[in-house]
Image 1 (cartoon, rainbow, N blue to C red):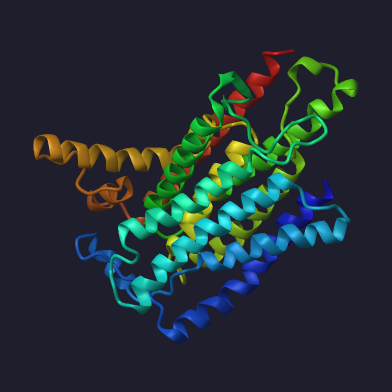
Image 2: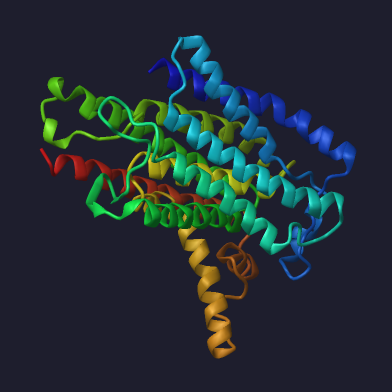
Length: 356
């Protein structure tokens, strides 16, 4: 359990201290954010704010995870390393997108096909590898069954699993990316979800089928390969994002960019897949889903009827154009995300209690 504490504290410390150094480096090189001309006027003042801040919490998370292992003398586990690999791979795709936008002065960044190809390579690699490396109970990091609070139903097979995992990775990555439109919004929401996954990992470890002989209710045990390691990853991410939020909250001194948003979305999807909570993540990350759906509704309505449902999509900008201040939108959306996490954890516990 000490691993979790060390990972969270180290991640927090590294981003609190390291992010200002990254801000100075990016500012010196002139790597500033472009702002959409059709967005809220208040955002134009943010033009030139250093971006690619995701570098800070990606590196902090990796260091926090491995340093916690060194300090406690525990070896890395396959599930945790795979989730970290997915996060880093998606972050690399986002970094290339940000780099081209800023350095090459091409507003759209990576070409759509190149960006999608990068995400596909990273996502498929994770999905295929997650079905390997069985432990002594024959549990692999991921399962070919669908899951809510645990696996249910029948196996969908490895091919369909790869498609399903890829969908989850792309959906969560783009969901966080769309949410990252206001200072601190996506970062604060991510802190809450990673906090939830820290709790889930600890609970699954305590109720693991590997400890079935000592459990009061073996029928309700969790067949998750490395639950404690997933909690360590989630704690490292929570701490790193919390430290980054100090500099990313309004008025933001740095933006996470696609580097950060794609990495966070990949990490969320990876944690959901490896902890067997694939459908539950849609509730735990409810704000990301809500904002993504606002874009789908807006685009669909305009193409079908020629009319827009919202003044602007994603949803946070609709409320800005209605006159809400940026801070008001962020705080209220954080409240919505907090309620989603509370309900999600309640359902997670209820799923376990129902099997007692």
